[in-house]
Length: 356
Image (cartoon, rainbow, N blue to C red; front, side):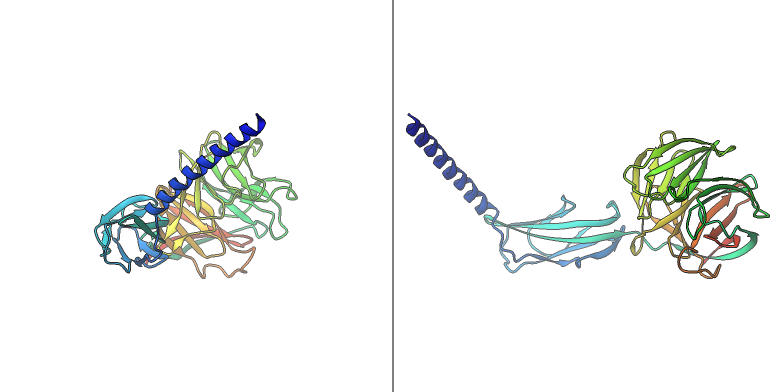
């Protein structure tokens, strides 16, 4: 009986393998690839400006084919009966790297080609600057966050260059520190901050943790964890959402009540990703962002991630390349005054943007 059962199982397995082989064989006949297909257009890794047409054209040795289907990120965008060029609109595509592919159907065979393109926005408006005024700035302040309110500057500092992590209220005209809360600099490296009503929200760098403090007393009210953004760099508030950077090309949008991340947007200019977004300031619907180790401020549309403007601040202050960078943007909404400073700088500048 045991032998009979084994034989029966053997026959069942044999039948199964035969059927499976037939299925795979038929499948292979339907999806045979010749490996002769590639894109003539667009060029591999080509950057295409958002809104410009994308030209698709294939290199294929055989003139006999049934149809061609083109895809962007697995969504069909065009088809044809030969490999002649077709044009696809790019205006509704997301910024960044997009996967393009084509499938050629020829009898029972299917051949495919794959490539990548990068969708980028138009070049932003370029600005220079004019110095309107200068104010003293504490040279022990390793500036990470800066905001203006009612004649005072609120400033968060990190523990770089031998300094201490702190939160400060500073007199704009004199640069005098009027109020200061220090943190355990062995544990916390302070980063960006923003005012949110009667609260101050402040980030730490690598602790995956932020603080909510009372604006008047600087007393700590709560802490909150990070989520997808693994580091804290810059922070601002648009009246509805906290907007956070983490040193990448992303801006994260946080619920102001829970401080939890809700969504994000990738930031691009005409050259591609804009990485190392640092200290942030929300001004008239745009996010102004320092770019780490560059004397540049990117003006970003937070809804699209497009860099719409760029302020070149090269030459505003002679500073070392490291631990002395431009970092700190504040705006006086009532007086329409724009302030900038940097880590351990002795001066805070009021500047005027000059269109180029």
